[in-house]
Image (cartoon, rainbow over all chains, first blue to last red; front, side):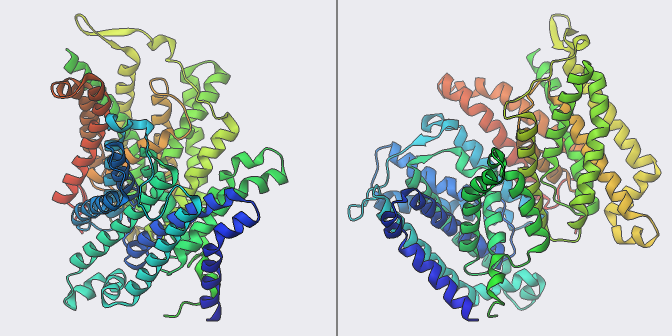
Length: 316
Length: 303
């Protein structure tokens, strides 16, 4: 029980201090890794809400990266650089898209749901690659959103903004998990028929959850676009949706901090598996995914509960 | 006559996708397995064929050797990984087979190198045929259509007329029952998976001379193959065929005729850039439409 409170607190504290630490030890590169971990954690938190708590395997979550990112990118290309305008527009775009996709795809079940969410994501992917005016396949260089108060070009303040948003999403998710609304979503995961019989309009509950998750995913897309000052169709390729699922499952499905553990593990493996393999045998590092791929297979086969289960049984 | 040529191209793409989708819909329907790594078998088929063609110096010999090789590879993958996944939920299957994709892509990079390979069109098929006076069509593409049609007929015969096909159909409707009736279901699953792999490999090596052999070549077409089986209804060979033909025609027609259509209101440059994207989008719109209308596909079993 104690590990469940101490470990997340320590890790969040470490992340809060990351810009100071990387500056003190002159490891600026680690800050950019940290920024990516934090942004992907936000996206994973949002996916975890529908996949983990709701049991809805959405294979198109990266589309929200793209929609959030492209909304910022297109506005910036048109000369509108104020974040006060860009961000709400981007969030609204993600919400509208989530409402459309959710309303259509939540009618299906199981594999069909996986595939229809994937299809919608592919649709956005190809649409964006057809936007010749905004870079097409090559993507679009953008300038970072301007807020007046904080300068997003400063790496440390951008990181802290992302971190604050991650904390907010985690807090929101923790409230969601114990709320009446969240309990309906979780109940529908284990037995949809029972929830319907109890009188809950499951479809509408799920749609709202899908839209919330979409908005949060769009937020991650906004941050991703600002992090790289660049948007491209590649940010919403289906492989990214797969990566998000990997992060959620690796961290622990339906666990509050699971997305954070998953993102840390995912990017740590990406960063460190290469040098480790290179140490074992020169030249092996290049092929780190030969090791990473089977690791995912093993996780799928044997690691029920993901990294989060290492902290002991969950409270409920 | 442009129209006729594009229809033939659509048929050819449709048959190729049918080969890929057939194995996918069988494993989906019978084993209830979401196999994202099916596209990797398509890629492996092309690379293995490239190696064998290099050894033997003959396209036909190389292809004939590559088919049993992908069959064995498929059975190996089934025995090592897939059979542990049948009883799992779709999420675990997505995760594990996603891992397999990473593995196979990187394996190919380690063994064959990062650069793409090309397989030349075999010499005896490198000419063109006059389909109508003054309308030439490449003989290789004709051969593709013929080979695809023959395999499709063979598969239909296998599923509809043989004992194995009977077991496959029985397994698709109720696999517990046929296991209870004493059928060696493990062996059946391994064989079906190997068969699906061989079909995917065949599609990969047949597409190689007109596309290119490269890492990740199976990933994009796999998504389209999934779209095909979802439109057709999971587990239905007939549905996969109809949907593959439909998707093939839409994709090709979009690429061929949309640029001219778009040029009427867009600049030529942006029209030619947008057309392939829009024809892809049309395919997904078709799928979304079908699923909204029939949530289990055109020929799928009603829940």
